[in-house]
Length: 251
Image (tube, rainbow, N blue to C red; front, side, top):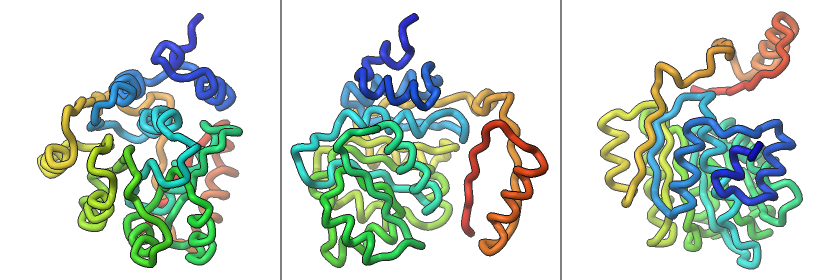
């Protein structure tokens, strides 16, 4: 049987890495987004957590980087440091032994260490608007070579008031770049932003009533930064899950 990602023209190396991650069949958002992104189109995707939207933009990204060029070529902007770290981890799994350099640039991490790593000429930056701007303003990196741009959780970014900083970053990228916007909702504000930032756009709208896999149990815990690790550990002890994903959202 043909691997579902191979049928989407994903390269053999990426298909192999996905198989190592236990992923063989693309989810609906991936089936629609990956061919559109390979074709050079911009994409707006409405997709809830658990629908596979992260791989929908990371898989094409992995094949758009030229390692012979030692500058930033792709930028993923997220509203939270936790999400940026999670996306960077997934990106590294997809890349495997590739020479593509990926760096998460967020607050809560040592600034000087990030500065040192940026001097190593990363190809992909994944980060939060504030910390990215801090490094750019200090001359630690630049975005002039970015031709692949992702704004993840756009609705959350708008709600938290980060969009002005995100737009400042976008203005620093190459004039001709490919854009993907991901959002859990398609509010008028999100649509207006999409019209401003995209062209030749493919609109992907995964049915929110069918967005979350039925077998996934979702739990929300309200805790403090000090006790969050203990709270998660207690939850694991109580439920003993086979697999789980943890998102930390700071307010």
